Every structure is written in C-alpha cells, then in structure tokens.
Image 1 (cartoon, chains in turn yellow, red):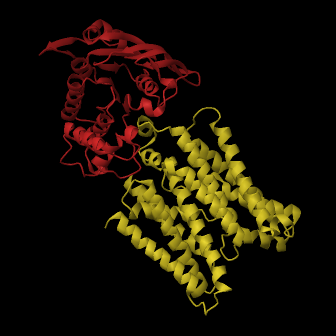
Image 2 (image 1 turned 45 degrees about the vertical axis):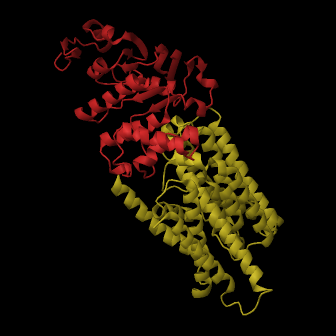
Image 3 (image 1 turned 180 degrees about the horizontal axis):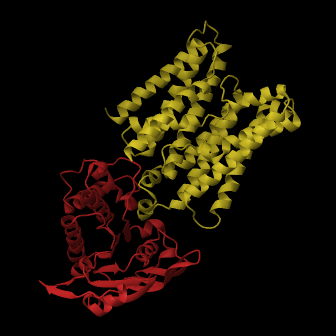
Amino acid sequence: MRNSTKMIILSVIAIGFCGLYLFHDLNGSFDYALPRRAIKVIAMVLTGVAIAYSTVIFQTITHNRILTPSIMGLDSLYLLLQTVVIFFLGSGHFTIVNRHVNFILSVSTMIVFALILYQLLFKRGSRPIYFLLLVGIIIGTFFQSISTFLQVLIDPNEFLRVQDKMFASFNNVSGELVWWALGIVILTFVVGWKYFNDLDVLSLGRDTAINLGVSYDRVVKMMLVISAVLISVSTALVGPITFFGLIVANLSYQFFNSYRHIVLIAGASVMSVIALVGGQWVVERIFTFSTTLSVIINFVGGVYFIYLLLKESRSS
Amino acid sequence: MIQVRELSKFYGKKVVVEKVNVDIHRGKITSFIGPNGAGKSTLLSMVSRLVDADTGEVLVDNDQVKRMKSNEFSKRVSILKQSNFMNVRLTIRELVSFGRFPYSRGKLNAEDIRIVEQAMDYMGLMEMQNEYMDELSGGQRQRAFIAMVIAQDTDYILLDEPLNNLDMKHSVQIMKILRRLVDDLGKTVVIVLHDINFASVYSDRIVALKEGRVVKDGPTNDIINSDALREIYDMDIPIKQMNNCRICVYFNS
C-alpha cells in the first residue's frame, strides 16, 4: 500500500471519529451541545497534533525512539507551578480560577524555563545532547519531589484541585483558549516548515548531517525550542499527556515506511486525532465517564512502551 | 589545496592534536598513518568541521573554513566517518540521493538523479539499488556510503578508516575505487589508514602522526623505509620490494 493511500484511509477514519463524536446522540441540540462538542474536538485535534509533532522532532534530534519531550521536565514544572500556587495562594486565587491567567502563566513559565535551560547549556559551545537530557531528568525529578512534598502538607480539599491538574482532561476546555493555542501551534508549523528537510538528514546521525551541510547546532536548538513551545501549550490547555506521543510517533514509523518528516509528522498527527477523539468517545459513551481518557492512554501507552523496549533489546 | 595551520585540540588538559601544520595536495591520495591515539581521526574531524578546533585554522583553496557557510563547505569537502549509525531504514538509492542534499535541499531535479545513478553505477550498486541498508554486508554498506560521497561531488573527499571491518577482497576493492576517483575524476582523497601496506601501495603522500604531532610528511617513498617507520612506530620493520610495491613486513618484527 502506498503512503498516500494509507494517509487517506487514516484521515477518513479521523474525520469519521470527529463526526461520530460531534453528531452521535445529538437529539437536535444544535445550539447547545454542538458548539461545546466542537470546542472539545478542536482541543483534541490541537493537542494531538502538538504532541505528535513535538515527539517526532524530539526523537529525531536525540536519535532515540523511546524518549518523549517530557524528559525535559516541562510537565513536572507545570505541576510544580500549580501546586505552589494552590499551596501558597489557595485554590480560590484568580491565577487558578481564571483559566486565561492560568494558561498564560503556565505557558510563559514553561517556555521561559526551557529557554533559560537551553541558553545555559549551549552557552559554552556545542555539547552532546545527552548532557541536556540528563540535566532535564534531574531538574524534572527535583520539581516532582518538591510538588510531592507540598502535596503531602496541603489541605485535603485543596489537594483535590491539585489532583485535577495532574491528569489530562478534555472535559472542561475553555473555548477562547483553544483559539489562542491554535494560533501558537500554527506558528510553530510556519517556523518549523523549512527545517523538515534538514530533519530528514538529521536522522542519518550528526556526522553525516554536518557533512551534508546541515547547520546541526542551529537546527537542534530550533527544534528544542519548537518542541518546548508545543509541550507547554498542550500541557497548559489540557494537562500533562506527553507519554501519548511515544505511541503515535512509533506507530507512525512502523506504519509509514518513510524517512520523510513531513510524512511521519502528518501520520503521527492523524493517528493522535484518531486515538484522542475515538478514545474520548469511548470514554463518554461506553464507559459513561467512569474512567478518564488519560488513564486509558497511560495504560495502553505503558504496554506499548514495554513492547518497544523488548523489541529494541532484541534487535541490538 | 587544503592548508592546515597550527591546529590543536585539547580534552581538558590532555593534548590530542598539537599545533599541526599539513598541506593536502590536489589530485593526490594522502594517507594519515600512526599508532593508536596519535590524533589522526581527530585531525580529520577538525578539518571537516565535525569537531571544533581549539586553536588554528583550516584553508580550503585559500578560503577560511570558519567563514564558510556549512552548505558551501559541503559542496567542496566531504567526510565519511568509520561508524555510520542510522536511525532510519533506507534503501541504497535513498541514501545515495542524500548526497545531493547540499545542492537540492531534498528536492531532486533531473540533474541530481543523473548524478545519483552515475554514483551508484560507479560503485556497482545499480542492481541492488532498492535493497535496504540494514540487509547489506559490511562491504556493500561501505560502498553505498562511498557512493553517497561521490554523489556529493566534492573536490576533496576525506575518509576515516574506510577499511575497518572489511576483509581483504573488499579492502582492495575500496582502495582501487579511491585510486580511480583520483586518477579518472581528479578528486583529492585524504584517508586515515591503520594498515601501512595499504598506505604504501595506494597513496601518493603520507602524513605520519604520533602523540598529536606530525612526525613525517612527504611522498610515499620517503616515508616507507625502515628508519622513518622506526621513528613513527618504535618498531624495526624490514621492507621488501615486490611487483613495484614496497611491503612492510611488520608481523614478526
């Protein structure tokens, strides 16, 4: 089967799920239910694309197919921020209640953190990218430990609000924020577009990429910034869900027999949409909200991750 | 001509390459030889800007490499390292097509395709062009990578131990191809070699390094003699002349 045929089939499935989610059991409620469902669908598409895009480029620049950008500690920073604000200012504070303020605060904190981290690490010439990952893991663990410490001390009622933030949820996404997030994600595509060909070469390894005239350090830095922005936006919109990227990126590599990033990113994005919209429909209609999508994703993702680890260790 | 001027590299306090001056002459095969850890690979990596030099500069046809854009440099000098790790599954044809990246940025035109096919033909890869790289033998893989470098169509080709892990037949095959590249196409080849007999038989000039410094630099015949080799390797190596080849009999010395 050709890649274009595969892409068309996947797109049809994705659009089918979106239609199913929007119109199933609508009972003519075009004014009330439809716009609310539409916002959720857009949020899911947006998150799915952002996660897929950032994971594929992150795996290419790290030359590793079992990493996700969450290794940079951005999700941990998000949880720390929410925990700290609720701990010191209370869950009634406007930075928690007002979702716009919370969104802007979260996104800007994560992006500023990522930029400072990259700046510090890249200041003294080029370093191996694994150094950056190690620093990310350490800082992420540090943030997590502080969050856990504060969560132990916090008032139990307030802890429920923190817990709300710990799992991704599409159930109450603000309509306006979706449009802001959409703008930012489109911007990352506009900026990233001209690097897609360079990324194809980057998967041949650092030395070959430099030999073929790719400005390696510049491309890597640019891709790190783009993936940080995407993760920040999707995390601030729906919560931490980056593990999900691991599944769709690897499914895309397996399903599309291609080295071209434009194909891989598009494929992973469409698969994300299928998984998120289809999964959310199943959660709402079949499990009638008795579980959440992120629980299912973490379960399926965990199983797939173990499969990948076993497969990688066999092949090497 | 590639001119290497006062090039040094330190890892912490350890000196890997120290103030090296070498001229690479056009239209010749120049071999870098020397004991393990002499800095041969590091020197080659610095010349090809894979590793940043701590001091010194490199000039390619009188242009400073530091001032050159990465893309411009890749149209004039290519480098092939000894281990080529890949994260993707490519066919030979796809890999060789990447050699045109400095010119095409990923969109091949008719001219690019012609050069890619010529390069595969030159390396005898036409029949297996649609086979995947991970299913090839070591010699075939090496030939595919060399075809990529040929498609890159640079005046200067640098190779870091291209004979590593190859058997005698494939080693000779690769060396003969490199010789043809120089004699037929007028390329300039720089090669890091471990086996001094390959250096003796195939190269025009030899640069010998030891502990990060150039100890000998000259035409092959000046270097392949017992006195010079003693200085380089600390071994007494008798030299035998056979069929116009000088063979170093180092196995029991």
